[in-house]
Image (cartoon, rainbow, N blue to C red; front, side):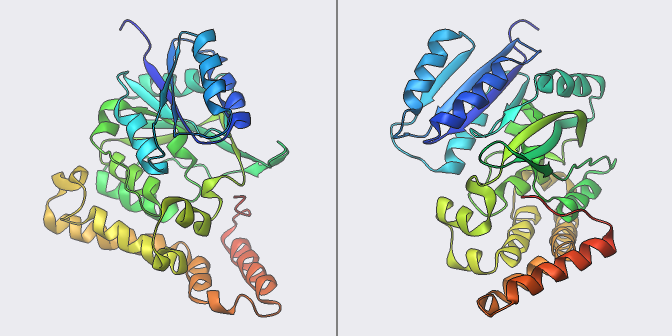
Length: 316
């Protein structure tokens, strides 16, 4: 195949300082035959100047500047839906990649046609670049699509997999990502109908704690979602999973048939809630959080559950 095989999309808004680091990490990839598309969501800072300098200095860089801010999700969807290469990935404007990230992920995809997405492991950092710890790696290797989907919703946490390399044809069949809480979870659930997901441990995507997706309330504000989604986010996500997987949901699940879709929708929503009992309890007890000692009691309960399950603390 002539020309680049992979497009790296960077959606950005008012993050000129972080964007330079993200872009430099892409242009320094050992797999150099790539295309970079920066989608500037009508930034008001120096982002436009950063983009113009990058495009002038490297012919692999293309800039799309929105005339007005279309929102986080629409910017993401517009970026990925127009990728013309065989593979595509998205990188947040305050994150960065190890130099061999694309090379290692593409090698896994080339070696195994059944994989639809390969990501590196996630490493988290503070705003100053200090290391905070690893994320939660996910390998979704079940042979049956419905089994992959149910397993996914029961195990997804920080979803660094969304920053992996994907097969463009499969991704296009799963877009658009919905403008809802956990829209990226729903998108990858659909993608798992097309193939398996793997984490390549030899390379990392370095993620900055404190971005738009750092907490549910911030996500609600940035995406213009409802008060109910802010107050009871995990129940809202369960409802969204049932709707997206069920018979009236996304066409990605159509091969299952209506009856199987209903069963999978219930199973997937229940798996998500069952995996997060303390998160659900915290949502329901949110009015009590202002009481003295409530936050410390919640953290003690979370630590006790982590010890019982043999889990390490969830960094983000």
